[in-house]
Image 1 (cartoon, helix red, strand yellow):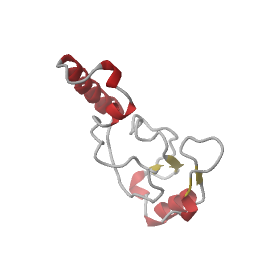
Image 2 (spheres, rainbow, N blue to C red):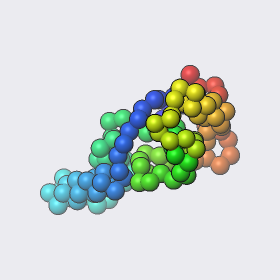
Image 3 (cartoon, one colour):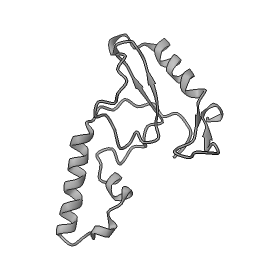
Image 4 (cartoon, helix red, strand yellow):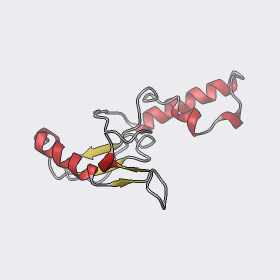
Length: 124
């Protein structure tokens, strides 16, 4: 996973994509193309509808809500979050730049407790 900023807007419900991934895995096991011991995080991730795009580094949530609302739960495992009190129609360049500024001042650890794996301030 790189430290650079990737700009994407994605709308997808985790329950729907995880159900489809589970069905695909179950079908492969039933057909003998996959064993239960081969089902791991990578097997699940590769069957999600978002498998062909990188996981987000930053998720910006508008409307003042501080929850994901079933949005990219699997993919957001190591994402940073910015919660803004403005509604989506009012999200403009200034709000985007403020969110990026907040994000760029964070030290990203990608699940590590001690040393920093990547500092967003030095990312290109």
